[in-house]
Length: 109
Image (cartoon, rainbow, N blue to C red; front, side, top):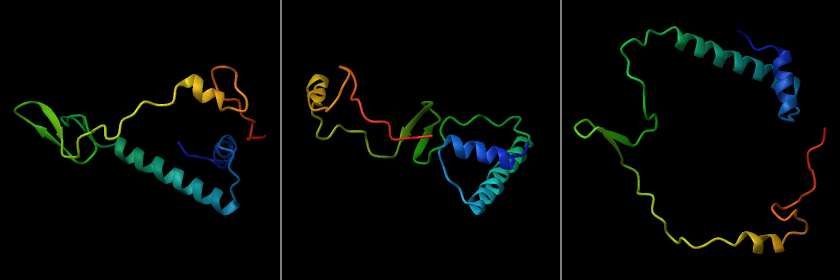
């Protein structure tokens, strides 16, 4: 499967991007390069290869305990304090519907 110029134009329109002709060509080349690489990966024989549970570095697996432990800092709640109550936040809104802030539409088509 190949990405076409029409595909790039369609996605750019959905993302509300204005691409130059050079950017469109580069995007077409880059997306097709990514798809070619994924196709090459799909051709690999992964029989007997265990699925990865964690792709992020900084995690170690303890074979004896069957658990992963992080070598990163602990997720500590420094300076935790209550947030502004919802009702109080809405009192500062120029416009609201009682649940959400109402804001003007900024994206035009």
